[in-house]
Image (cartoon, rainbow, N blue to C red):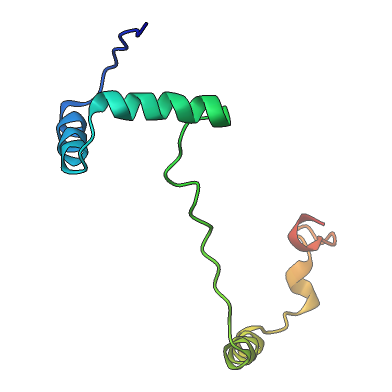
Length: 96
């Protein structure tokens, strides 16, 4: 026995997906059945973004050395008075 399932989908999305389904020889019924099978198998909703790993940039040794050099050039010491609060009491760096 088969049950009827209804869902509200934005019209534009429905039309675009139906066209793609037709182009691959499938149908909305097959899509819904596949989604139900997926949830049964995994216990969660499909997530198109899940397979994407976060962007990770690896520097070459030359790039890392250049970055270190530039950071040393951009970092300057400050006088102790910089860390003192306006009322003369010693302040802490960054809320330490």
